[in-house]
Length: 189
Image (cartoon, rainbow, N blue to C red; front, top):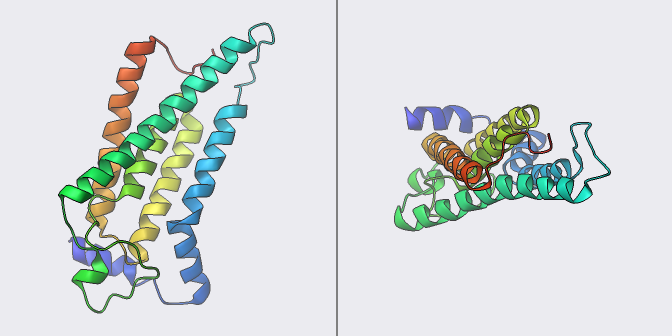
C-alpha cells in the first residue's frame, strides 16, 4: 500500500517544468513562508480586542501564544531528528533505482518526516489558540507533506507518522502548558 500510494503520487512529478517547480516550492520554500506568516499573525492578531490600559498583559499573552505554538513545533523537529538517527530508513530514491527525485535531500533519514512532524505540531498548536488559522495550517501541512512525496523524497508512511507524532507532541505540550500556566484559550480574552 505504501509503495502503491508513493508511485501514484510520484507519477505527478516530471510532467512539466512549472509543475515540478511548484512541487519543489511547496515541499521547501512554501513552509518557510508560512512559518513567517504564522509569526506575523500571532504578533499582530488581536481578536479585535486590545486594551490600551493593559499593554503588558497583552504582550504577555502574545508571548504565551508564540511560545506554545513554536516550542511544540521545535520540540517535534528535534524529536524527528533523534528518531531519524535511531531509525535508519532509506528514502525512495535510494530504495528504487528508477526514482529521480525533484531535488536531493538526505539519504537514510526518511522516517519520520521532520517537515510533517514540524508542520503537524505547528498546525495543531495554532488550532488550539486560533481555530480558523489552525484549520488553514492543517491544509498547509498537507500540501507540504504531499509535495514531499510527489518530489520523490518521502514515502507516504513517513509523512503520515510524521503528522501523527507532531500532533501528539502538540497535544501533550498543550496540556502541559495549560496546566503550568493555568490559562484558557484564546489567550487574549
